[in-house]
Image 1 (cartoon, rainbow, N blue to C red):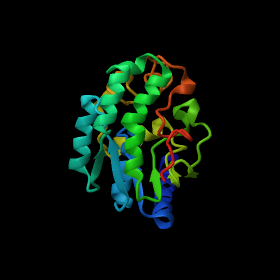
Image 2: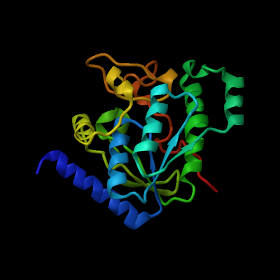
Image 3: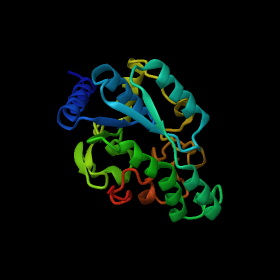
Image 4: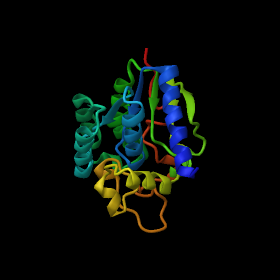
Length: 233
């Protein structure tokens, strides 16, 4: 059995476990390459897993085009959550429309308004959530587990692609004709908001294009960092 085939079977087994033990389960789809692999696997094997994405209001046009392809190509509805308008207006009034470039705290405050708070709403009523995070993506993700209790949100969290390599992700995409963000073909291995994402050069870390003005240990938006999200009452 090839390594990829084995990992596909392991991933499907993890999805089955999540549904069996923690239903209702939802998938946080960032529309990155890894998440498109999970989109395809969920649609084929566990279509009863809900799927959502966060529209921060600052996404690249290519991401919106992929969002539409997901809607058209898959039978699992993609629910889109948006930041609260008043919170965005308050942030801009305090920091400016591009104030996130001025400090780590200002950037994380922007991420909180545009990502973390909508995530909290998206997870209401669920018992587990699924992400496409992989261990080799960043230094901040080296200690992740395939399944662990997410104390901040009070639910279980699954990372089914944790041990997949970048090459395996792309082999699956190409072999299964999975749609993906056109920016990946322009040297954008990791894609977030347009103002906070740039292309990388050969030899750079895959996350080098995200918040490139910050140190690597700060490069998380708060969705996957303990104690970033206030607990629900």
